[in-house]
Length: 79
Image 1 (cartoon, rainbow, N blue to C red):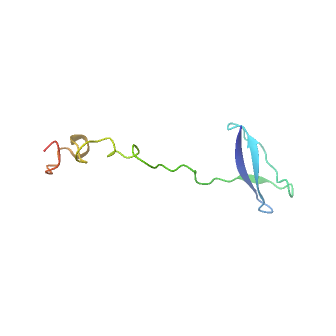
Image 2: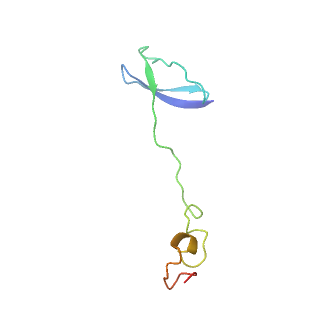
Image 3: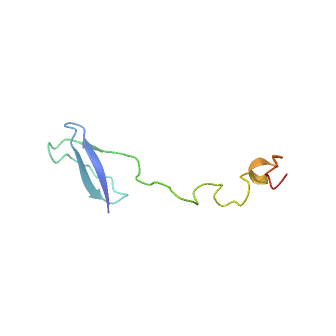
């Protein structure tokens, strides 16, 4: 079961409802009984540290033949 935020389209009340991810229940506002809609918000995930960028796993320069096609720079291992 997951918890979702809903907002009443009548009074603007925001409240939580717990239901399964595949369920699409008709949710009514507990304050006024009006129709409600699901509220979507940004995720709380924050990627920090090494391992999240394509340059983190490489040793040496940041360009490779796969990403640059042999760019010809001095630090390029494919020069």
